[in-house]
Length: 360
Image (tube, rainbow, N blue to C red; front, side, top):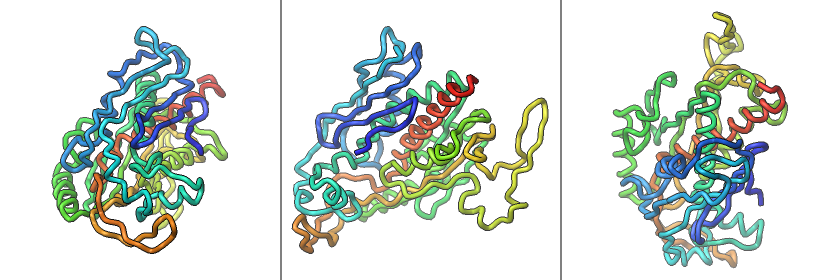
């Protein structure tokens, strides 16, 4: 099982949803970075369950502990180990799942691969695994911000058929966090919240799109041919629970344009090369070109719904499964910090790789 991600800035996550805790080991963080739990906790607070009326009510503080890799408030350059204890498991709510596979969950596929699974909350397939990613991502974001001047802003762009109007050039974290759905378009946010509440009252779920803009990435980051910057971003996003795609720059919309319409004209001013448009999304040939990077990640409706569904049991007999359990009626608000984290992990890894190869 692959539980590690990254090359020079490398993480390994561990733990199950209903075990004693979850965490991450981060190897490759440069030394002398000022770091305490207070630098990490805000990102985990954005990800944690129970934070609002439109997310799962599981009651977890998700308090982070740094176990190794720092001394007197600074990183040592040695592996950083972090953990969060689980507090509100309620494994008894999953008893029926011990012998029945949940539709559109990884229950059956894990059995098909390993012959065994942790049916309590989904084990490693639970979104609780992302705690380690978000904790490590907070460190990556701090490095990117302080040493490279890079800013990452992710937000909810769409929930079901409600699409927000967002200015990628000016959107801020404060605007994103101004409401519980994490959509900087306040009018759309109100409609999204109302929709999610209605969906929840009906025991159902709904999906949508998280959009990300990254400002300040210099030209030159990326490792062709197989580690193209957008390829690593795509892998990072598709590794997140419930994600179903990756769309960068003009994305799928580019198929409705000709080459002449799509090309980004290149200009120069004040000894800086720039493009007049940014349909490439800040990456050309797998390498950053100095323009803002922007992309979108669609997330499916959460698979846990409060309705009886058809399934099979562990003896492969047809049966039904009752709808029960604590769940997010829409994963989007909590997916925002996850997308932030995976973006930061990819970018800091490529920043370090670029510096190691080119010395700049």
